[in-house]
Image 1 (cartoon, rainbow, N blue to C red):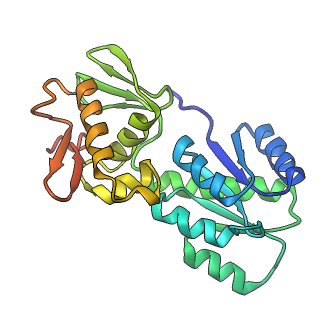
Image 2: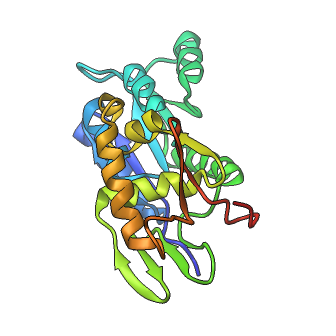
Amino acid sequence: MSSQPKLILVVDDEPRMIRFMRMNLELEGYRVIEAHNGLEALDRVREDLPDLVILDVMMPELDGFETLELLREVSDVPVIMLTVKADEEDKVRGLELGADDYVTKPFSPRELSSRVKAVLRRADLTAPFEKGIVRIDDRLTIDFNRREVLVEGKAIKLRPTEYRLLYHLVSNAGWVVPHETLLAKVWGYEYRDETQYLRLYITYLRQKIEKDPAHPEYILTERGVGYRFVDFRSGAS
């Protein structure tokens, strides 16, 4: 089945620039959401899990570099930086902080489209799975577009927090994800010590997807370290 169009978050404090990017990206068939400052951008990334972020450098309070630095603590989403400066130092700083590409204002719709396609293409080559329908085994299928699981053919809706937690576990299937990493990705970097939140939502998820939540087969506990989703791609556990 084909997945939904890619979701792009555009972050800029100028409404005119956001309208320009939204219009041109939607004409290209992308879904677009927006944020008007760095803190709002961090919330949107955590809540909506976009496929790409277009991030302006020159913003009040939290600038693009500071936003990117915080973003990289909780997400590896591809980022294209926007700047009015053609300063080589700015470009190097952005790339060192984890940006994937740089576009200098003013830019044409064609240039924006070309950069977006190139970055998304590179991201798809390293993506752990296509964000769509993932078949774990004969019993469990996850639809990441509808935010639901199918257990023995029956659809079970997930709460937004459950969805984000499951997404990060499945996208790292076979690997142990530390407690603090899951807390930062799902709740935000300021929640890295709130392990009771994580234990509670792991319990909720297990009650929805496991045959026997007391003896889980999908979400495995690595005592004192974190959690690991079974490696469904290789059949190993």
